[in-house]
Amino acid sequence: MNKANKISDSEWEIMKVLWKNSPVTSSEIIKILKQYTSWSPKTIHTLINRLVDKDIVQVKKQKPFYLYSPKVSEEECRNIKTRSFLEKVYDGSIRLLISNFIKDEKLSDEEIDELRQILDSKSSSER
Image 1: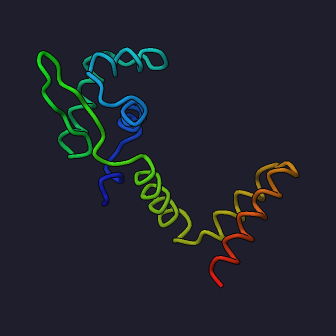
Image 2: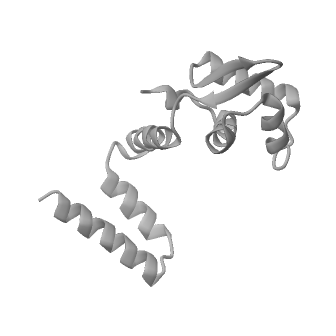
Image 3: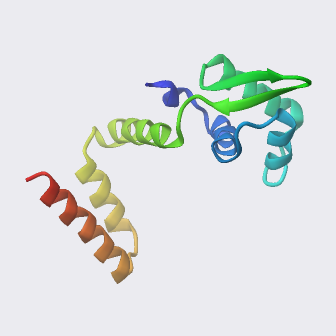
């Protein structure tokens, strides 16, 4: 499903609220987002409506409210966004992504060990 590629950065903030709290009303979304954004309620309503129009968020009328919930899982969206980023920036090469990241980051011994374990388990599972 390529729906996740249609989600803007602002819409992603709405999705994070929905993934964590759904189903929720628009008032609840506004209340949560007001804690860390300066967006007006109108802006938030516009973002919610865009997500509904994109068929990424579903809305159910439960009088007197509308309840919103995601139609796409967070994991699915992350996987699609990651794949899209990998294709766009690194021509699909995960090796380039990882080597670029590791070169520019200071990693603790614990993080290096964890990465080794991930690679070792990946290697043994594909034999």
